[in-house]
Length: 295
Image 1 (cartoon, rainbow, N blue to C red):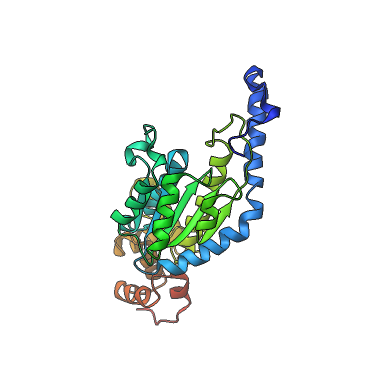
Image 2: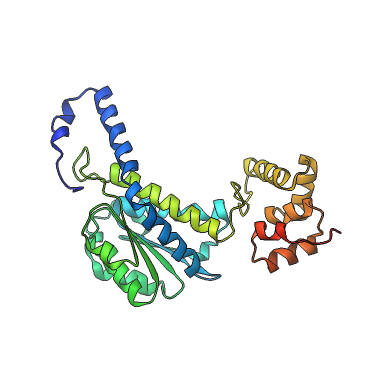
């Protein structure tokens, strides 16, 4: 359906800018609405992925063209937002990473190249492969997905067309049926919007399940600039219930590690904080619930 020419947009090129913008706005709203039927499938994929990843599993993003670029964007943001190790993020993109900025024509047509990317990256048990393709049948992405299944990885397929191979091949198939585009086949529009939202949901919820979020706080964030240092101070102060000055001092003691700083702000020593977090698998919520005598 993403390739269909929608009759209601037959004279799109003749419309005023205001009419065009209004139509595109409606299209984006339709993309959001298309996610409602998929929410339970998204939740199931998240639960399975968080369990599969454990302490060493990797998130492997697979895609071509627009879908590949959206996948890379999601994966690239995991390190600064959640301190997800870069070594645990893999990108298998048709045409290579150069295709992020310059279209590599024909790269998506080789299923063998997709399978080879999975093999070359030694994808296997414990890894979670997120394959994105609006059509649901892109050869590169399908080849990668099938090889990942053979090698024992958990696979998630995100598509915008029903009854397509990727839905059937993935351990968890997610369909956001966004229909025809304003510009037929331009899946950077409605289909791309739906894909971006699904990717955001999956990665954010996985990180929360794995203890990298506390409440609404990104407590594993890397404070790499002045803005983020200020944010870290606020987080520590609000979670630990201490003054900004005490929060900043706790962060200094914790070498910028927010979770450790929160425990220090609650009266624990650096050593106690480190030991407690280690015992709780790095989960701040669990650590805060454990009764430990302050220093």
